[in-house]
Length: 317
Image (cartoon, rainbow, N blue to C red; front, side):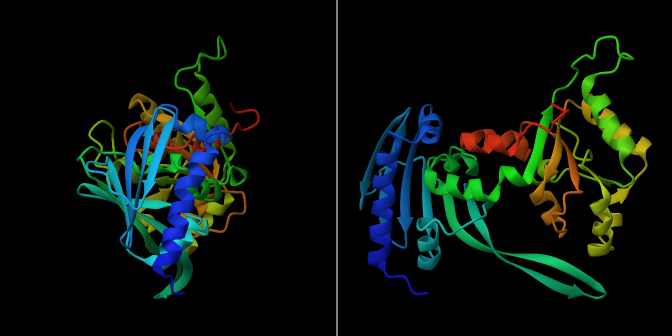
C-alpha cells in the first residue's frame, strides 16, 4: 500500500478535529482529560499538528508546531500512520529507550521450528516514537487517554477475554482460623490445581530495574494449560520457571505479601498467548505486582477504560 501525503494531512486534521467534537459527548474522554495537562506535538512523515490538554480543556492546530511540547509523537512510515489513523491497529506494546519510548503493534504471529521445538513468534512493527521533549517522563499508557490509542487498548485488552481482580492485602476474615482473605483465596485455587508453574523472576521488575521490590518473586500460573508451556518451550522452562508443588506455591504467595506486593489473580488472555498457548480458558495467572513497575500499577497512567482489564471474579472479590 502506498500512502500519499495528502491522505495523511486529511486524516491527521480529521483526528484533531474529531477529538474536540467528542469532548461534548464521550464520557470516557471527559473522565480521561479532566485532570490531564499535556502538550502533544505530532510529526507524521513531516505532516505536523499539535494538541493541548489543560484539565478538561482542549485546543489544537493542524500544520503547526509547538515551541516546547511535553511529548512529540513521530511516525516515519506513511502506511503505518494511515493504519493508525484509520483505527486498523489492534495491539499496543512499548519499549523504553533513553529520553524516548517506542510503541509497536503485532504485525503477525508465526510458528517457527527451532531444532525439535515449534515456537510461536511475534513479529512487531513500529508504530511511533514517543519523545520526552522536555526530559520529563510520561508512561506510554498516558497517550491511551486519546481516543485514537484508547480504541487500540479496548481491542487489545478485551475485558471479555480477561477475568481478573486485585486481592487486597491483610483483609481479615474475622475469627476464621486467623487467616487473611488473600491467603485463603489463593490457597483454595492452589490446592485445587494439578499444575503450578512458578516463574523465577518478575519480568516487569527486571525490565524496569526495580529498586524497591524483589525481582525473584515472579508470576504463578495455574491450570491444565500450563502443561503446554513445557511442549512449546521445553528448553526455556528450566531457565525461567519450573513446575512446583502446592507448598512451593504457597511459600511464593507468602513471600510476596511479606515483600509488600499486590496480588492480581485471574484469567488473562495475553498471558497465555505470551507463552504461545491458545486461549482455552484453563490458564490462570497470579501476579505479584509492585505499583512502580508492573503493568497492573502503571496502567493507572492511561485511559479509565484500562480499569476494565480487571473484572470481578464471582466469589473471589
